Length: 235
Image: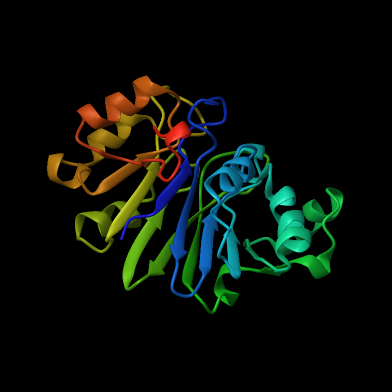
């Protein structure tokens, strides 16, 4: 099992679209969406991703607009277009409720829980180093019996996470990368130096600055996140 991606670009990479992954269980008609940035709702509609979905969970890593910018529109569509009540999963419930109130989503139209309250999926939050102004989180997920690390946006990888990958704890490992040195994202050279050639094959890079970043990650032996189910935006 691999997560699918609606977009795999950074904040300024409009060609690739905002980074967003999902897990779709067609049998149970349920969808787990990770982040819902500015471009995500439009792509969800183009891909008809919600067509048969009866149950929607939305896991948010942080509140930068390239990760949450169209969440409000998605919630409105679920309320008025689908007649379903999505579950929003985020560690800081009061902050999220305040945000959704500011953009006009009424509390009865969604359910808000933190990761440990989620009964459908096992989710563990990891506080990440990304911004001085807002909290950012990565997650360890268990889906279909597989353990998945999803970094969200982060400048570093914590030592226990590095050691866990080297010991084979994770079945899938998703990491945001940048070819630039920034205080917000992990430099691709730094990531490469942390892992040997065989270990790099286990890491799926995402959140690309541009095509150059993607090509560089591939040349170093990393796996690459791929956008699926829409030929018009395939990357």
